[in-house]
Image (tube, rainbow, N blue to C red; front, side, top):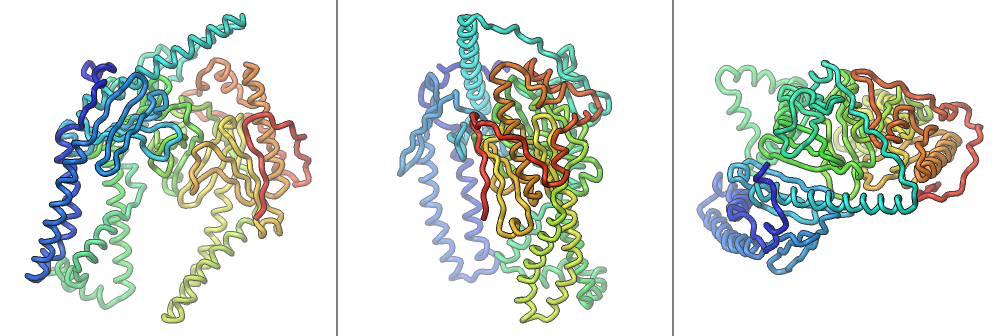
Length: 606
């Protein structure tokens, strides 16, 4: 820890990157050179070899000086309240990154930089679509020192803001008494065996401490190696197959020659039998592809999530994971917008889920989501989520309209016909593809069964997906836009789709309830917006909105802490006033209130 401590003066003068950055940049340029030389090395003629070597030499003459100049022109330093980065060769760039705007400092170490004692530092700020600053590479001690310097600056800013606010309250004479902070829940032995680690009421860590997690204070979750392997067993990856096909095409390898090479000797007779039966040959290819995808999924998952740890450091979540590439990242709690439970049919059948957080303000992996619990039982996820937001998972979901089955079946059928009909003009057996229609009907029905919504306390829950299954938990105070929309086909069937928008929501996977009865959608939208207004009025008045939150969450709101959950148990959902939305569509929605809060309600038709 002592080696990580630093002050502003240590970085006040312009600094260069680590000298071994030149080595790493040169190594990263080698794959392009090898791809240029590979075809000629394998089967090229003498003339082609000379031409390729000429191009390779020109590539080296241009690339190596460019790497050196880029390294010499790169400088960074830390001023009183910002980090300054100078970079660029032909186009010079100067980036001034205010330290109070930095939301995430990610430290990443791939295998070679780790052996050289280097790390890559990414600086992400609120409102940026990508990293504002990237230091590639600095020494590991410098990386931790930069992060520690920024954290100390931000803590000092928060303390000054708190003192200023307290002074204003004392001047008004309305300083409230500080509510006592209740301890986090103690977990059961079963939860500890699941790899979940939380602090006990006496603030002593339960199980292993977080001393090996840098300057962590409370270790929330960890995954032993066997758990990571089990997680990979539920995943498939086409990475190996894609690389094999790409290499076959690029290197012009003959598949028949490769098959003869693999099935020589005692396998020759079996290969002859398989080659004479197209069905057997196709089944074997599919089986081998499935096995390779399964094994690749296990390997890639193990490499990525090995040694996963999640801990709480003040108002930020910290995580560390990776075997070959070690990644350390930060998730500010105030930037969390939506909690997501993600699964697939096999995982859900065995009760496994993963917890993701949708955040705003900076570029993130996983299509805009942070994975904070990669693999755990549902009852083990809730205590971790309680450190982020008060969460009461619903026991049941309201269904959308059954008409959605017909709508999805029509869509799938049109897509299948668009694929089969053109192919059938050249290959008559393509008409056998219509045998998939019953399966499309089953898929449409499953889409209906796994799509629904529920409201619990101040959360809107939306369940979606068949193969990739999601449960979105959207806090009411994070919603920015409430929208009902209806296409021309939905209007003819009396349907609407309701969506809620939060800051930083993804454009592909987002909370939306598709094909609700029109009256139900209107009533739900009005009720959400009414709750939104009441919540902010109550919060502005300083009173916990007990009619919007569960009892435990209301008490937590008043104490400024997460709600407590009984160890190893599932909290029962409170009585939900939205059950009337499942009734006949003629119900009158509640009277609208004046829109005085920062939200938007809209209805659109297309």
